Length: 403
Image (cartoon, rainbow, N blue to C red; front, side, top):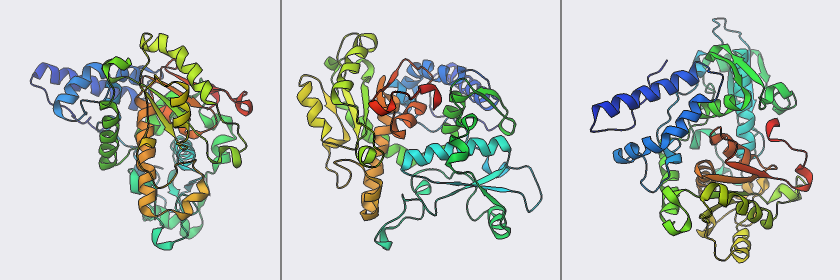
């Protein structure tokens, strides 16, 4: 098992020893497959104490809350051992292709489930971005080779790996499409289900814990992307005042998704009033009756006026308050064809700041009908009392446990 990385320095050798022992315990617990939520629970419980030492080392921005220690520091858990897959020496071993479908968080969710299934079956896999709409551009000069490698560490085997090349040559590639990992309910890794992945020594791990753990080992923003994202989030949080109910820079976040969710997928949007009503219920229980600053993550920046007019005494902050060239009035996947590389980078810079805000806020309100909310949920810890998904007419039968 890979040794954990030291991310702090301390003047006290005793503190250093305790810190290293804690992270060693954390890594061993997750990698060896403890079948409860102890590792992630401990990580969040200890983050408040650890953050002061991380801040002192310069790894974590002083403006960020303790909950940001996990996402704004180098990863605790090691990356997945993609190249150790299969444990077979034969040159014609089956290769799995995991394609990218839809928008980024939809694509990532399916890749996450495909990755889990591949490790469970102990077979090698690669991510196939060839037909992803995320890469298509009308101007060939603005086309991208890869979304994943542009912003994140590699997932799966590289296309140049000899095993991938050989499997393609002899036609021994099986596609794990979205039906394999979604229509088969066992492969969704739903809440309460258990899975065993012998190749990772995960034994009877609960479904949501498995997804949280595998997400952290699979989805790893590149260091400069992480730094850029956390710098921007720190600037937002530095604008909060202590009078806003923001003890220790804690805040609330909303995920507001509009755009093509109505025009293409026929969902009814959650109303601004629903967010306000649920926020008012969370304020007494999570913020001691003090209205916190609220970070609004949205693809439709026109909602900011609605929120501010409905509650003029509340403080709402958003990436929407900056100037953006694309995606201001609702994201539609088909619009990406007209984007430049600069537009694409700006869009995902905004998007990642929003994901990090939703992941690190003290309380989060999302919606069932977007994978953005789901991805943020699994970036968060195991405490199911710190977030809420809003019901809308076509999502009233959705269940948290089914995803």
